Image 1: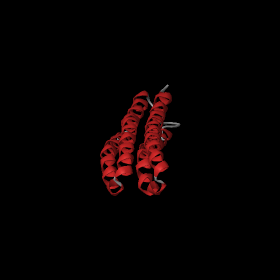
Image 2: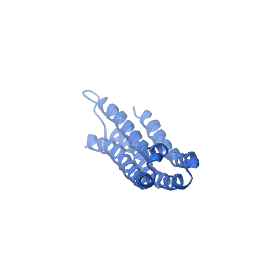
Image 3: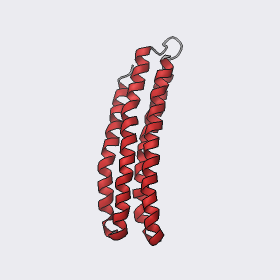
Image 4: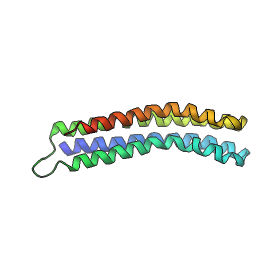
Length: 153
């Protein structure tokens, strides 16, 4: 049971952040392909806007990987206790939830940026800057998960 709780934290960190990224990239790419159907030359300006919501999934994967390494330390004479299992579970939650929500909302911001780029191509950098504001919260979730992970002994 201790390992089940710990691995559930791993699964949530990776899956929820990944879902947020998949939905966010889908939203942004859908808008970008609409813009490119009219003007294919805008691909370069739209590529980063479409890809940016994918970072949350990367953050979730990194935390999941680090959590798995932490679980692997508890073997043989030093088995995983229920308290440590719950700590590992809890350490996965910040990036899981922040990644899920920020990935989706960043996709919406990037889709708006794609629409702006359609009409004002020279302002695509402004759209990217606005999308980075949402990224900040994914980074905070990553950092909190990482700091919590470091406290598990």
